[in-house]
Length: 322
Image 1: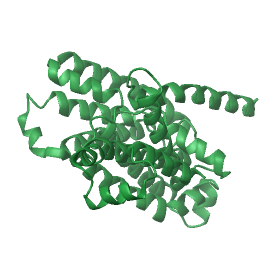
Image 2: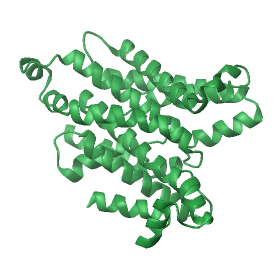
Image 3: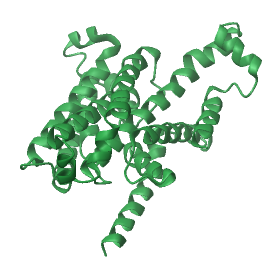
Image 4: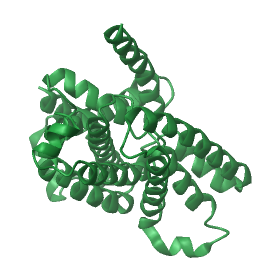
């Protein structure tokens, strides 16, 4: 059902309808120039960007929540996304001061965002680590790091020149309009490789970690090493994903929880969260483009929808504890 919904949303995003002949013409390059321009240069990159971002955030959020056993431990809450934002904004506004950054070409944003995410994740883990990884302590430290990195982004924006400021502000809203094939290629490559590792090779580790650290260790799993590897891959994935559309809020938090409830699993699973994240991104972009008089960035739509979901999750957790 969810796959069918995603397929319908993708068909709508490309704007080709259900005309099989038109699809064949576009796929073979025989459609008219106007149709090819719309699909190849406008709608195609935007639709693929929505899928890549949804898959990347979905997997990253699921792994982080499963390893830390905390529904609030998603990359956008514990500071990873803010670290990626700081790195990306620095590469945007710092290009004039350091022209060598431009030599990276389409890899500039992905590398900067990924480096920022990895540094933020390392700081959060280093400060919160006390003989082990405590999810409660990590979330608290992450919230503090998140606030500090947000201040860093604001400082960079204050010092930016007007053209760079405009580009950075559009990117920070969480917009798919800046997606291009050149930008999508390196990010899609990272999402494909890291996502495949997390879904295929590390899924069993997540199942074992769900049993608790003591049981996992008794079953032969090196808990600390496995947890650090999983979290590192999750941070890498989140950082690369942020480069495509900016810090799109709540997808990494909502997709794993929604998938867990829809599929009835005991913990967030990366594969199902990836599918849910892609569908949510396509749906949010569809709403942002068609439901309002003006075009809304997808990040604004996900934030409007995600905030009530966060409140609901907190109420559910509060009732369980009481």
